[in-house]
Length: 380
Ligand SMILES: Cc1ncc(COP(=O)(O)O)c(C=O)c1O
Image (cartoon, rainbow, N blue to C red; front, side, top):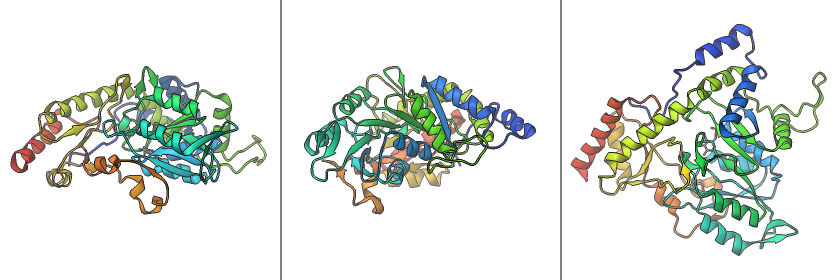
């Protein structure tokens, strides 16, 4: 089986993890936690980084930092992994699901602007839904597949409507827009290090911010809101969201290889685009001027999605469909879906992610290419 996107542990992972085991620093404090946080902060250019147990918990904390509360509304794209929406629900707020731009597969900012214009007003500096009077506190752009939309346009909208930006940049470590790293456009950005991400700690996450208060509060909340170093004093209902030293050690080793991983992703992307662009009906995720994606997970739209997926799986090539759009998940159907043409469904019903691990070999890529060309020859 040629896997879709698997960890690449070819750096100092063993050495650093062994160091944790040898020194007994395996749990939630230790030098690797600090070093990993520093490495991510430096890489992204953020002033502060707070590690978490996964990307979902980083998003949850970031929303709390934005002041999102029960009954608020949070704007989020309709095409995302479900964790973005769940993190909103954890706060008691409700998601407003915004359809995507069919070219970039990111939140459609024109549609968003139209929605804000028609359905909201500023009330004492707070963006409020006209009919329900709910507060719209935050907007969560998701850098889908490591691509990135027009962040300048998003910043302008957020300023105009007094919205706090919390970036779901979980898939976008290494992605930049006009030279600024993803995750650095709003109050906080969140990364994920789960098994299929561009770097992995098995499971893990990170919140980055330039705001010292936010960084301190986030660290505090992720460590059970412990307020005394000795006594068991806690000043809030905190969370056990810390990343353990042993996983941070792995993360540090992975960070040392990130540039090489991104290079490899670019090569895989170029390889696939080169032959796929000659095939009828195949569409790619567009990259807008100023965007520098990390090319995390190579995905195409194909008119015969189901047949091609079945064919490739039969040839032992692992592929995945795109996420079911959020508005189609039964438990989310009661929430507002802002859309005119339901591009989410169009992208979902054609999307196929192809093998693109950072360790994928040229001969494996050639196998995938041959299989796709055979499919087109036989069935298209
Ligand atoms: C877009 C998106 N949001 C959120 C998450 C949640 O991250 P994690 O799995 O680390 O909790 C992921 C990754 O799984 C993701 O792809």
